[in-house]
Image 1 (cartoon, rainbow, N blue to C red):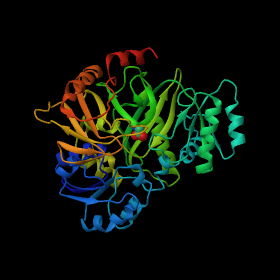
Image 2: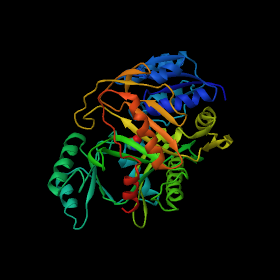
Image 3: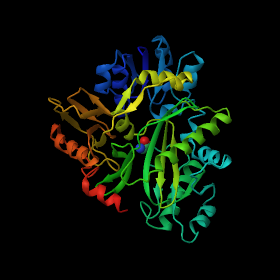
Image 4: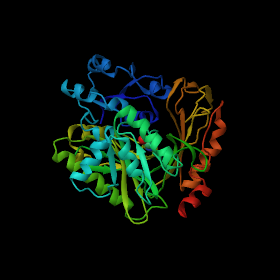
Length: 431
Ligand code: GLY
């Protein structure tokens, strides 16, 4: 399909999506706050967005007369941009603000699952009183994940026995959220393997993508502070070696039920849905639901996408995904490692990076994230900078391929070498 698409967002997921849009024959205009060199190179125009006032880009977007708009970042999905563009007759392949509540309000998501008896529910307490928090934390034999109700960028969740060593620190953290938000969510801690399932949906039909896994902790061995995600893996069979055969189909059933419930309530969700699940010893739990591609896992799946992405986005926006016949993914394992500023997750020290792209092997992709500059020389911000992704026969092979290409990156940075390594994969198998 050859159409004009406006892509909102200047990160790595948009870089991967933008390249597929160009491959499908469509033209691309990008709306971003930074100057992502890769997106700038493939866009016919870049429109600057003020992230504190995203609605101010509406006249520019309307002037471009796009056939379709796709909005990537969660912060912008949690505004009226999609609704206002739709009201102006623009085709939008992203959720309305109300439908995006599935991510922006964990209270909405948990209450929807409860009302419709959707399987995979984690026992939870939505509390507005510190005394009640203390009572719940006193439950014998239980530990909890403590979360703000709204968007956290993956960084607001703290788990007892992990980032919260004891009940006292859990209570202190819950109190700090209460002071800020007046509400706090306590979810029972589930132990197991976390995995991400992403899917395209027009609100009724849902097309799953391969399963992936995100590595959130800043340091090797899954230690250190939580980050937005330091890297991610996916396997050639589109599952993961440590997951059960039913993990993917069970997770998909849960996502379908969420879609059906939203549709039943007249709050139809169109766009990309991303469920974070946990496989425990005897169940699959839904930890979080998000209304966008996962970062970084979105790049794993988009890097092996075969088909016409413009067709898919059009099908989502028009509520006609069933007419899209060609959605395939290569049967290759992928490993992505993010290059981030030193100190990322605590006290990031942005600086300049250079990358040597000459002779880049076909199975290596370099996606640009929160950077400003040119393709081979750019400034990092305090966030993730560059994703190096490899496609291989196995996860371990892809991890090694990333390692052998890291010599290309010059400057002061941090990367987790262990993601996808055979030692980490072995450890996961015996967890
Ligand atoms: N993979 C974490 C996130 O996208 O929120």
